[in-house]
Length: 273
Ligand code: PLP
Image 1 (cartoon, protein in one colour):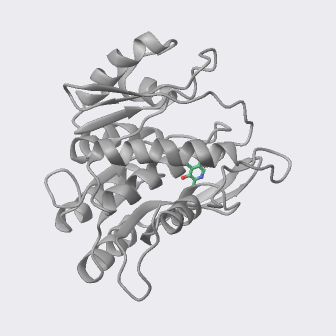
Image 2: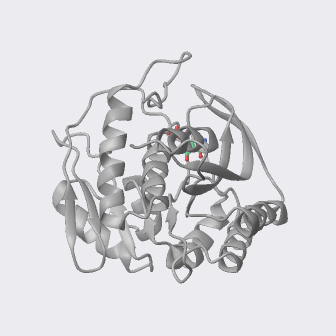
């Protein structure tokens, strides 16, 4: 991935996301990925989850103004090469994030690329986003995203489309693209019947298939966060979106291949590089 030159300022990336006390997903996954990808990671914490390998027991969302202040603080002083969002918890936090990003030139019309991972729930089904926040995410945040990275559950929440086979991915990508992001990456990991895992990237005109093996590995906690964070790292290193997504696909394949058991539930994808 290329480590930074000692003593020289590396590229910088910001994650706007929740904490996973178990260290497998959320802010913790993002920071580990940023480190492995040779970028300086920064955080705007949205929520604290009480979480282990068996799921999310509770969470506290932080005040929206505090989330926005973290973004403005690091953007004004350190500078943000690329940013990503993960767990955003509430509609009020989403609105505060949008305002702070606009003020900091983060997002579609600013200089800084913004990757939106539209996190709604954990893999155990625990909600990480208030019910009334989905509309804010869809109608206000997606239009400023450089790239959005939904899995098939999130495609259904955002568009109402129920994708059950690889042939339906293009329709889903078009429907998500209609919501306003520049690029859409549909993750095909949930098509478990398919012998391969072919994710689909779409920019409104080109469909780009990203093939990969289907790995039958039970420990995938933090996989979505890690993919989005590796793509964000590549964008911080000034890669074009298509190259950043190709890099992210390679990164997540290795992270899943090296995933490990942890606790009694689902272990995390690997961050050991
Ligand atoms: N916890 C936090 C704070 C997260 O941000 C996320 C995903 O973005 C999760 C948990 C869910 O991770 P997974 O679905 O891989 O269990």
